[in-house]
Each structure stands twice: as C-alpha cells, then as structure tokens.
Image (tube, rainbow, N blue to C red; front, side):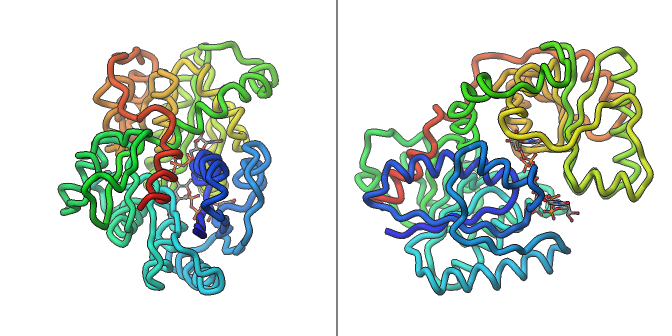
Length: 378
Ligand code: UD1
Ligand code: UDP
C-alpha cells in the first residue's frame, strides 16, 4: 500500500513524527512518501524539525511559499495534484488545519484518492478563522477521520457522521478494527499525535536542549509566550494590547520570553510596535520549546499546539483568544481564555494556578499506532 503524507507548516512536522515512526514499523505493508508543500520555509520553521526529529527528507518539496490564501492554496492544489497523478497513492494523509491540509485533502478527493485526516473533528465554531474553514472542509471530504479526543468525535457526530468506530472510545490497540461494525467515512478516536510526539522526544530534549542555560533562566521563574494567530497579528489594536499585557507582566518581575513567529515579526516591523522589557527570540526548535514549556511558570499563547503542550506538562496556560478548540484544557482548569484585554492578561497570568489532575482526554501516547493499525486493516 502506498501512502502519501502532505505537510508544510511547523506543527505538521511535529504531528508527522509519530506517524512516521508507526509507518516505519509497518514498512513491509506500507510505502510512505512525504510531500512538503513549502508553506513554511525558514530554517527554524521547517528544516530544523526534520533534523531534530530525525524525519526522512521529503520525497517532494513543492516550494509554494507565502501568499494570500487563494494564491497559496491554489498553487498547492496544482502542484499536489501533479504529484498524486504521478505517484497514484492508495491513501493521502493530511494533518491539522492549515492551507496545506485543505489543499492536500481537496486535491486527493477530486482524484478519488481516499483521504485520512489526522486531528479531525476540532471546532472553534468561529468561521472567521481560516483554520476553521480548513478543518470543516477537510473533514467533509475525508474517508478516515482520526480524532484526538472524544469531544472531537462528538463534534463530528453532530455534523452527521455515523461511521464511528468503537462508539467513539479510544480504539483498543490489540484489536482488528475491521471486526467492529464500520462504514465510510470512518471516525476513529486515536488519541492525540502531539502527545505521542511529546513522549517520544521529551527524554531527548532533557539530554540535548541547553536553552535554559543559554538564556540564563531558572525553572518556574519566567513566563513563556507565543503569538501568531491572524486575528491577533493582523489587528494592530489587539496586537498592541497583548504586547502591553506581556510588558506589564515583565515589569511586575516575571521575565517574559517571546519566541516570535515570522508572521508576527513582520507585523511588528510594519506597525512599529516593539514589546519593551520582553525577551524576544527567533522561533526555537521543538526540543528547546519542550524544555521552555516544561519549566515555565505560566504559558501565554494563541497557538493550538502550545495550549495542549502546556496541559501535557501541567503548566497553567493563558490563552490569548476568545475561544479554543481544545476545550478540555479549559474544563480541566489548566487553561483560561482571556482574549486581548491587557488587564486580564496580567491578572490571570500572575495568579495562574494549577488545574485538576483527574482529567486526561488525549489518549495514551500511541495515537500514531492506531492510525496505522486502522489504515492497514480498513
Ligand atoms: C499557518 C497556519 C496556521 C498555523 C501556523 C503554524 C494557515 C491558514 N495558517 O499560519 O493555522 O497555526 O501556520 O505556525 O495555513 N513566513 C516567513 N517564513 C516562513 C513562513 C512564514 O517569513 O517560513 C511569514 C510570511 O510573511 C508569511 C507569514 O509568515 O506571509 C504567514 O505564513 P503562513 O504560512 O501564510 O501562515 P501562518 O501565520 O504561518
Ligand atoms: N513550537 C516550536 N518552536 C517555537 C514555537 C512553537 O517548536 O518557537 C512548536 C510547539 O512546541 C508546538 C508547535 O510548534 O509543538 C505549535 O505550532 P504553532 O504554534 O506554530 O501552530 P499551531 O499549533 O497553533 O497550529
């Protein structure tokens, strides 16, 4: 069986890693090719992850780069189609909710190649987010919907999906999925591949990453922040208010570290906004990021992946958005939605407390294996 994974943006390289491991173990049954659309291309947004996570080099690099949504998605669609026509895979795998995800899913479904969506069923219910459009459309052309949580399964059930394997409960690893009653499109609760990734690389991060020493940071004595969501970066008022919140936290005596996404760097140059008293860094590698997250006193972010990693490490999180797809982190008390109100950002960050320990909705770190088990048997 030939499977093509289509990736292109930072979080997708991380989600790909556990899938690659599981595919590698099934290499007698699966030939796995990687297509990189080139959505992200700076060394620290792309190649560093291939190097650090030990991913094999992409079989195709499409070099699409940046542009408007229409340009970027359109170029990807054309170039992915050419690859798929040449390679004729049995299945295409797409990850998350970026323009790369949508282009991969659309190109494949129009060629009648089955599509598997890793991280299916997530919803913010905010159609102004480009990611929400990408998720909804991708889910509705997918044949396999691999969900990270039971909540994601329930979102799909509400949208009319009925082919839910094992009632939406985590798929047992010792089963033959074809023994369950099933029909396409198939919804499977696999657990979260980002939790797999964290478990796979946490030890290596402890051994290799020297970021705390390099930045002279003491564990639990700093705040870690990331900002890149379009709704925040492309609105100077929102961006200004968030930066003001971060500056005030730093002035209250808690150093703030801000590894800055290139999108946000660009907006700061354009608007002339400069976060004073905040330590602004280039984007860091995944292993460095894991160490920074684990040792932070509090994390402030608008990233989906970073909200979840804060939860995995049981570090309080302040989310710089009005809503989140990762509702379990809020329900468990580890994550607070604060939007862009500077006052509230400061107050919640400085008072951030631990949540409850009893809730663990993200599986057992073996989501990648469940994905491969399902595609082999079904
Ligand atoms: C994309 C995803 C977003 C995801 C994020 C992960 C879409 C619509 N958005 O947002 O869901 O959370 O990736 O990080 O797909 N740029 C560089 N160098 C790079 C990449 C980008 O300078 O290597 C700059 C360019 O100015 C570009 C801007 O960042 O225009 C935005 O990049 P783009 O890939 O369009 O969207 P992201 O904001 O990265
Ligand atoms: N990340 C990283 N370096 C950084 C910022 C984030 O390695 O400087 C990792 C982070 O640990 C997580 C993923 O990138 O695994 C999240 O990606 P991002 O925030 O870009 O996108 P999102 O998850 O919001 O789609």
